[in-house]
Length: 301
Length: 172
Image 1 (cartoon, rainbow over the protein chains, first blue to last red):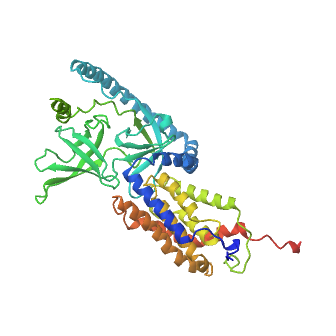
Image 2 (cartoon, rainbow over the protein chains, first blue to last red):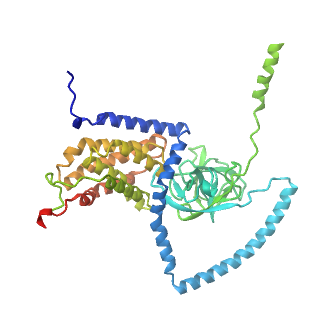
Image 3 (cartoon, one colour):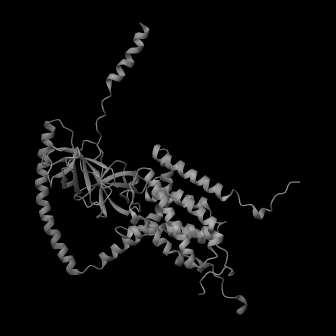
């Protein structure tokens, strides 16, 4: 006769077996997430589940902001009004000049049969929260695929490039900031026209230009704008200004440190530009395809 | 100290709703938009609550729940899927193995045993991130674990309150 323990003692698999199972599952998920992209469905589903909590968590800060707006003093409002009026006048003058320049530019481009540049369509989004993740510089914004945000779009504020949308969920999206470690932006120096690539350093307020040869024409204070050759960032957006150049003959490259022009970690509102514009397909590598086409002929002969 | 846990005191049974509510609230606290230095000292409330329930309700709350919460945190934080899930599963396992012993100590003595567990859980998250190629986040990253350890006694007291027996019914 077989002896079985009373049901009171049945606890399922042993704790060691369970922790082994879940650890293994985590490791499989981690490797799957790095190497393959098939886990996006799981991530999207989870994002929808925690979306109410995210909104709820962002509510106190929003509420405080609204309460602050309610208790503004009249003198403060008058001051602000005067300041805004002055800024508006200046801006409208600048805008008129800008419009005429844009018209002229469009005509010139037509003459050159160049494609029209980025048309300026954009979505205003608000930063819900900065992720509690010391490894990456990322923020979550309150617009997702339902609001027209797609992966790969550039995110800017009023003074320059902030980052790039790296994941779009239905109602939220994840933006990787340009200060994220190893995040690259192709740029061009306004003064010399030199093309370079700016990398994030993983610290707030610091960018780095890598692979810059000793002879490169770069100076302190140079403004770097996006060159637009990557098809992600529209051309001509300010990215960074050069802060420090270290020439050390021990290294083949110059060390160039920059400060981002945008308030990468300061603002709450950002603009998601409706790029990336369609870039022409890469030319098909012909030398490889031709021999393959010729081979069958030879066999027939 | 009436709130100091005495092993012989009988508490009311835990309702599943209480566990669910505390976990949702901890997740909410983790998602609060915080920047600057406060970001470093913010404890991982979800890890704390997971540890509390595995120690006090080891047969109601297990590694499966901890794993699911870890996945939620991974998505919310935007890291590799499985980073927090691994750390929380291991944390729940440690809590399960220690639950009989831990409950015999006073809250201040428990603190010194809980603190290394929370720090180890953070280390697991950091190591998983570094294995993928992220840089070492710096020592201030572990401040959150220290603060979390210090929050253990107040948390234990707070989560006992809903379970304290009502006044003796024979008295009235």
